[in-house]
Image (cartoon, rainbow, N blue to C red; front, side, top):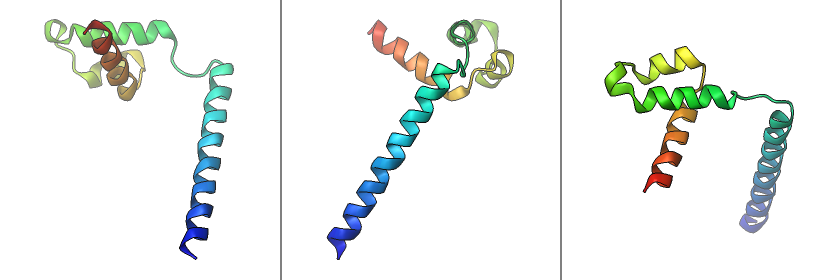
Length: 82
């Protein structure tokens, strides 16, 4: 009985992952998401936040780039630099 329930749950998880990936690809194809120049500007402001006195909330309001995107891209840059 538990094996059957586990198999059904795994199947449903796979379906959700597949639909999510399709939606993400469709959004990219339609050009949704923030422009790369906005993301670069947000990352520049994020890197200079000690000198410019801006908080992450200020940067989000100015550029419209989500906080999660700023943190993820900044983390990617740190990995590349190391």
